[in-house]
Image 1: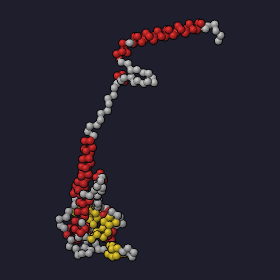
Image 2: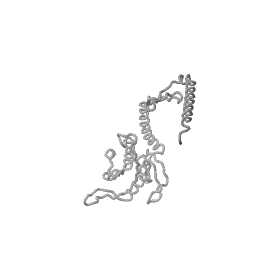
Image 3: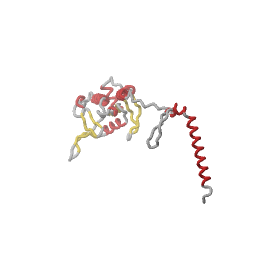
Image 4: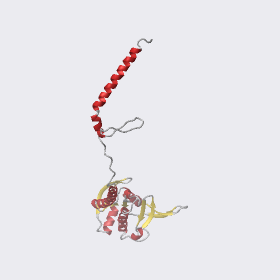
Amino acid sequence: LAAKHDIFKVHAIGVSYFAVANLVKDQTHDHCKRVVDFAKEAILVATQTLLDDGDPYMGSVVIRVGIHCGPVIAGVVGQRMPRYSLFGDTINTAMKMESTSDLNRISLSKRAAVILGEQDPMAVLEDRGPVRINGKGKMHCFWLGTTSTASDALGRTLAKKQNRLIATGNNMAQLSAKPEQAPEMMPPEQAPLATSPSLGLVPLKEEENSDNDEEVADAGESAITDGAEAFDSEFQSNDDSPV
């Protein structure tokens, strides 16, 4: 993108990308427009780039941009590892524009907005009003494009992510459309009696139990009576035995 828009990349530190126009070439007539076009396309490409190709749930790359115009000092610094760099208040102000920007939005200082209006009369700018800038107080700043335009772009990015989630959820729903049915629970009164060799329990049918209720009761009473008579006779026979 930098080569496409013919802007000069100074360096990239961490997640910050630092580029400039009208430095190594004479681009006085459109330097601000070049940087803005580069920033707009960078945001578009970022929203189409997944953070992890193997995990779409993580979403896409989100960036924020800050632009300022002004004089700079350029030079090569360092002896062991010399590098080309830029210095000056313009660099500091551009960094402040970026830090006070929003996701997928381009924030411009008042000076950058005025120059952009001259170089690109079709550019849409939204007045942010005074913005408190750390170390500088309040500065008049502008958004590139309207709030609704930026919200729509961010909304489309989130919608794509949501559609991926919905599609994956539908696939999971289809896989689990026919789950195994759990066995039906039988009421306790209808459940068969479990058999166990150690306990010697035998399941009895309900109709047999109902037919033999009286016989079981009579047999129980006879057993109790026979046991009591046997106990009395044994006690009487041992009545004269010493205790």
